[in-house]
Structure formats: C-alpha cells, structure tokens
Amino acid sequence: MPGRVHFDPVLAEPPAVQLDVHYDASSGGHALIFTLFDRQGRALTLPQRRPLRVDPQRYAAQLYASLSTLAEAAAPTNAAAFEAEVRALGWRLWAELLPAAIKAAYAAHRSAWAGRTLLVVSDEPWIPWELVLPYDDPAGAWRDEAPWAVSLSLQRWLGGDATTAAIPGPPVRLALASLACIAPHRRDLRFAATERRHLQTLAARLSLRDLSPADARLATVLALLREGGYDWLHFAAHGELDEDATAAAIALEDGNLLPDLLYGPEIRPQIARTRPGVMLNICHGARSLWSLTHLGGWAQWFLSAGAGLFVAPLWTVTDHHAAAFAQTFYDRLTAPPVDPATPRATVAEAVSAARQATQGDGDPTWLAYSIYAHPHARLAPVTI
Image (spheres, rainbow, N blue to C red):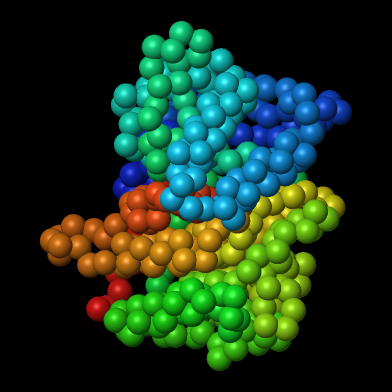
C-alpha cells in the first residue's frame, strides 16, 4: 500500500483531503485500492477495492493518445469539442473508477473541500486523476463544474513499494538559490529559447546562481547532473515516448536522455543533497510505465532520489502554451508578497495561476500537467 504521508501543521497547512491509491495485482488480476483521509490524517473510509476488467496500461495508452490528438489539432474552433471530451472523460473516470464509499464521502464533504487542496498518493502509473469530474451518480442532484485539477488544485506524490519504500514525503520549503535550464537549440522548439531567456531573467532578478550549461549535449547534461550544486532543474525539450520505454526520452542535441542513464552513485546523491525542484517541460514527461521490478518514469526516478517537486505534462503539449505555463508558474511562485508580513504563493496557487494563463482556445495543455509536491509548499526566503 502507498505509505501514509504525514504533515506537520506547524510548518504548513496539510491538504484538505488525501486520496491513497494502491495498484494490486497479487491475485492475478488488476485492482485499485482506495483510502480517503481528512486533513488530520483520519481515514474517512476503509480501504476500498476496485477490480479492473481491462488491461489498465492499454486503457491509459488509448486515453492519452486521444488527448494528444486534441492537443495536436488545437485551435479556437476546437474549444467546445475539447471541453466536451474532457468533461465526458472526467465523468467516466468518476463513474467507473471511484468506489461507492469514496463517492459518498466526497459528496458529504465536497462543500467544505471546495477551493481547497487534494493530494493523491499513488503507486499506479496510468490514471489522470487531475481530470476526474465528480457528479451525483445516479440521481444527478449535484455536479462539480471543474475537474479536480481545478476545483481541488490536485497535487500528487508517489507511494513507496518494495523497491522504492524510502521515498521521502514532500517538503514544505523549496530552495531556489541556484538553477539550471537545459534547453536544446532546435529550430522546431522556438519557445524553448523563450523559456531559457525567462529563467535567465529570473536568475538575474533574484540574484540566483545560473548553472545552465552552454549547450544541451548528452555529455554536458550528465556532467551538470553529476557536478551538483543546483536546487532547481528545468528541461525545455521534445519528449519522445516509445511503447517499450518506461519514460519519455528527453531529446537533447546529440541523443536522448532517459532515467536508465542516471542510476549509480554519482547523480542520485546530488539530488538527495538539495532536494531540487524539477520541471520537465516535455511532451509525456509525467507518463510512467512499469520497469522490471518497480514503477518507472521520470517522476519515480527524481522523487525516489529525493527531489522535492516534480512538474511535467502527461500528454502532448503545444510549444507556446507550455512556455506560458512555465513562465506563469515561476512568476507566481517567486513574486514577492504585496504585504511583507505575508508569505509567498504556494505551489498550488502557482499551478492554478499557470493553468488559468494557458486555458482556452481548444488547447488541452493547461490540464496536461501533473504536479508532485506538497500543495502548500513555498519557496524558502531568497534575497531580491
């Protein structure tokens, strides 16, 4: 089962609700086991088992292919079609996946939870929980107007398993004293250069150490990761997902970067030392599949190594919307508060602002991002 994530209320407000989702294949079939917790960590339901009648990996592949097709055909004329498809998908996820006891507990608390935060702690690699759209099934007496990504600013974290049981909980303070932006120089990635310039400007404004490499060749990036000293990593590149891979390949200037190249005693200790924030602004960057012994993918690799935040899209995203999402996220997260006595924005607030900035015109990029973080995490104080 996913390990319970415990929060110190003195350091940060816990999420309003936590949903633990465990993938179970011990009986030879596929099943998800759900448990719902309130902000005090009290179980609102007993563990609820939901058998799956189809191969979840095939189901997810078809689902993300459909969403990627929408993204690739994004245009203002597609806005209504996109909204209808996402709404139908969200209703279907709610109706087919969530057990009756979870639905009943949600219905009883939805008014109190509205506009708050939800943390999904999961060890399954398939379901876009961000898109779940609750409604009263079957009476139809109520319906949520927006999916969980919006209505509850859904964030994620990974539950441990037999191989990755040591995944630490999400920190409530994120360091930002030094950053590195990896953005290949490619003509078909016009807005990657925009992201790089934005982060350079941000580093200058906040007096950060800019460790961004001069090029994005594979050897250069591996050397950067081995050297360490960074507490934020940002990748702006193409992501290429192969059916046989456990993660999307990051297309660099002379080859592909995959998690398999990062194991060993050199890079993982650097991640554990600083618990960096990581944004992979690449198509399919948050997708995960099973490796030989455990859940694979970029989220699993970085979080099991010790990263404190991981942000990436689940499906194809368009270049300019992806850049706008990243820029708004960083601007909101680093903006000084109007009142010096108040704290900076939380991760949940920064993500909400980024989604709002990229919503509209039929492009699903604004809903594509999965965010693995404490919802109420903030940047540690920095000198401006």
